[in-house]
Length: 143
Image 1: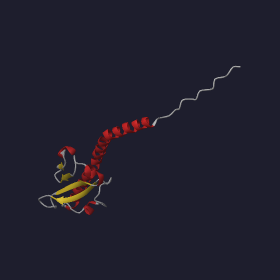
Image 2 (image 1 turned 180 degrees about the vertical axis):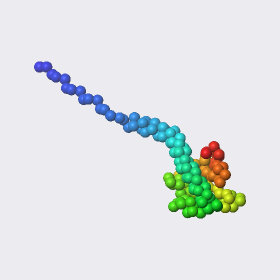
Image 3 (image 1 turned 60 degrees about the vertical axis):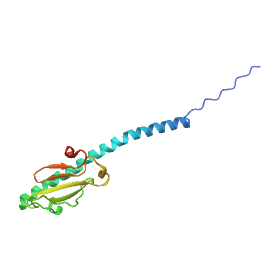
Image 4 (image 1 turned 90 degrees about the horizontal axis):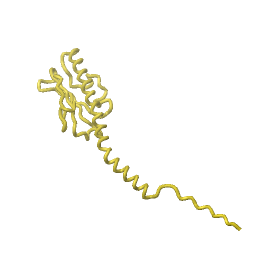
């Protein structure tokens, strides 16, 4: 009598716990390397919100001056419903320069929310002469 060999059990397939832990560790290291660059890139792109806001308001100030012969320090006179930028990353302040608001203004956009952590380019300013300034480690290079 011939005996047939019993079929061998198929080897187990799948991942071991150690293999999964190695993958998780590698992903964690990659995340730590990529995340700071990503957040800096996001902050840099959000700076455009503050600059665009200031340029629009400078234009509104000049229009107001053409119609009234004076600048204004009241954002409502410029047709603003809010002193926060359209994307919500900057807050506006309007002030007079040394000569007084009638002849000179200075607009400043101050970062708020998550953008407030931007140390490279913090506050953006523009005045009635068109001079642009920025605070932070990059300074005027931000514009």
